[in-house]
Length: 217
Image: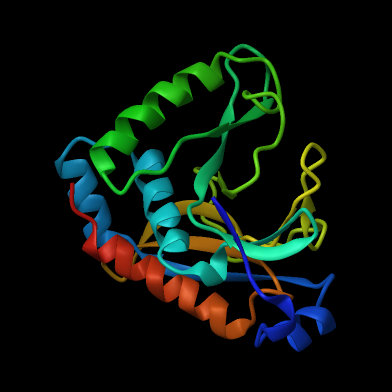
C-alpha cells in the first residue's frame, strides 16, 4: 500500500526541491560477529538472513520508504527486498528476484530459498518480468572485502511500467572479515539526497546494527 502525504505541508518540501537530482554513497563497517554466530549456529544461510535484516531496517522507519507514485509524494507501507542472484548456466549474468517481506523470519527464509532457486534457473534480468515498485534493492559482493564503492545511477529510479520514482536507498553488502577479533562487514548505502540527508544515512546504519545485534531465529 502507498500512502500519499500533503506535499505543501511536508516539513521537508524545501530540502526535497533543493536537492532533487542528487545522490550520495556512504560506506560503513558493521559488526556481524554475533549475527554470524546465531545464523551459523542455527544452520541458516547468510544472504537471506542479511536481506531480512536490511528489509527489517527500512521497514522500521518510513524515512527510507519514500517515492513518487502517480505524481504524488508519499511512502510505501512495506518494502520487499529485491536482490541480485547469479543465473546458472549463463556465464556471469545475473537476475533480480523479489521475496515478500515477513516479520516472521522463518517464513521469509523458506520463501526466499524457494524464490532463489527459481530465479537462478531463469534466463532474464528480472525473473518476474519487469522492475517491481515498492522494493529495497540489495546486492552483494561476497568475495570482496571493500572499503568504499561509488555508484553512477539516476538520482531517482523511474519504473518504466508504472512511472513511479523511488527514493529508497540502494544497499550493497561486501565480504565479512575478522578485524581485531571481531567480524566486520562493509555495507554501502546509495541515498537520494532529496529524501535522505546525512542524518538519515547515519540512522540507517545505526538501525541496521541494532537489527543485526538483536537477530534471533
